[in-house]
Image (cartoon, rainbow, N blue to C red; front, side, top):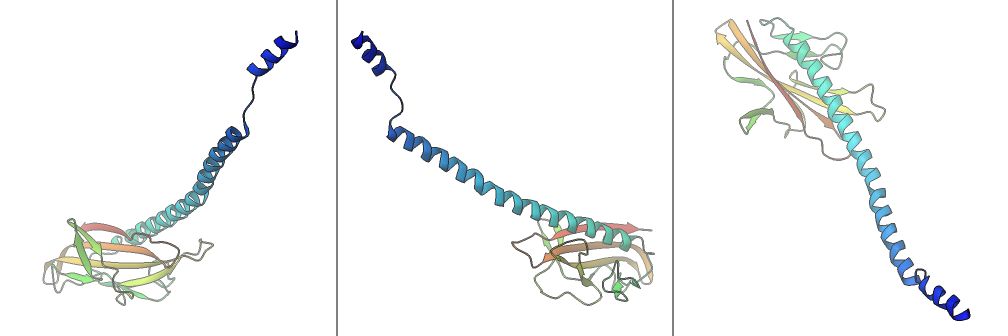
Length: 185
């Protein structure tokens, strides 16, 4: 009977201390890898929020600009909602010279016109810095635009608006957003 008990006991071996250490190390490596995903997901969430805010603001700004009469060469925003700060004058392009870029510099990359943000300060009346009042971190956006007016002399047949926006400062690099549209009579 004693020999049957010891035989049964030798078949019921548990884990050795070495096996337990390997299992613990593998578990810890997995937990550390998962723990590193939390800050990365928080950073990506912040970047997506900035991109979404910039896109919404750029679309709102472009909608306001294209709603202006085609012959209008500039406007003054008394409230500072669409041309910050209040009372600032924003240019919309003049018919002379026709078919040339007016305003912020434009670069063409892969057949796409983009606003050139290489100059740290924008051109007066063709750019402004907009502080986001809804952002708890106080994000500010650099807004710049260019206009290409087509027509003969004082007759304007269309205006092409290229509007770019990017976040100023912040942690990390955020790509500028560019919207491009054409308004015709």
